[in-house]
Image 1: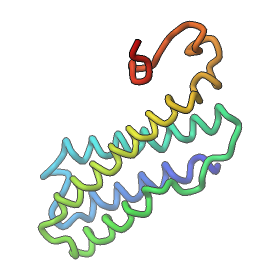
Image 2: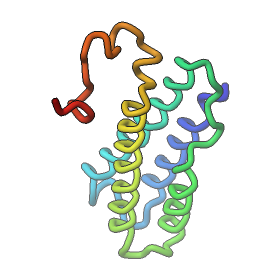
Image 3: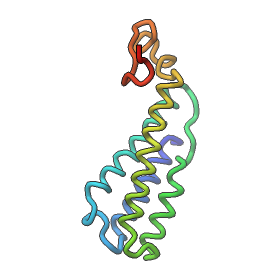
Image 4: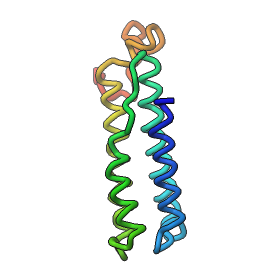
Length: 135
């Protein structure tokens, strides 16, 4: 049940934002909103998968649920006014940067080599995305 808390809260917050948005954010910025939804869910689910693979407990609440709750609250209360699209852009940039950072950190710490021995190990000289092997 614990791994479902963050994805469910993310789904609820995003649904509330779309339904109660005073500026109809989904109609104004559909691509940006759907990009943010995809990256946000990807990040949450990737962390749950890593926890499952490493036999650790996932965190109850993902850290970017808190800024998302602030943005959604400000948007549906009308505090953002015409800045709702800018807030969406800023939050999308934050979530995308966080997801890229998470991916690079997983690769650079060798977690994938630990979890998938033989498949991506140094014995096969497979270097993911070529980020860390230049010669």
